[in-house]
Image 1: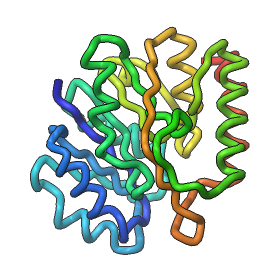
Image 2 (image 1 turned 45 degrees about the vertical axis):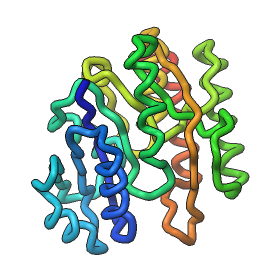
Image 3 (image 1 turned 90 degrees about the vertical axis):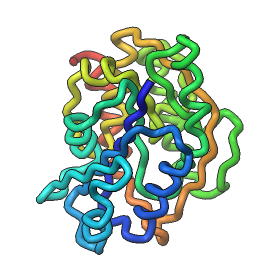
Image 4 (image 1 turned 90 degrees about the horizontal axis):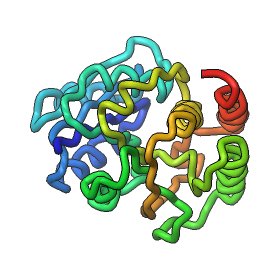
Length: 227
């Protein structure tokens, strides 16, 4: 099955070239669809040089809209039977792709979540971010009667027909709880696998913050009772 990778990016001039190279070096990806969410730091200039090379497509937003909006834009341009979301920083390692693909290749899943809490190697920083992720996942499990370990993971792999069949509206990082809620309500087969995780500090450019935690909380509750 062909694998398309969507890379939403906003102001990642120091990492965008590296992450695209790492994705390509794995040899598993048919196409990389990069959505430049109105970068202003030189990211756009790098992407302009890469556009059209070795299966790379670059789409652009004139105004910054957020990760969820960038993913929706990316979905309009994919051709593979499978689609994976890849953040543009270096927190998630494309060497984990074979592990993510295996449950779908074996016919055991329609969606695969790469969990940061199943024992894979990780950089031990940002304690309170971990606590927030755990609490949001716990609330998800309570409301949706599930046993996920990492609802907020940035590594989500979908069969194309699954992700295209579920309308989602979140523009920012609340894409993660919205899509999870709708997958769980539809009883879609989700399998979690352990991944490595190397989080960066806020001094290194990490973007997600307290506002996003509250938006995620509201999304978890809202989509339990509405679609």
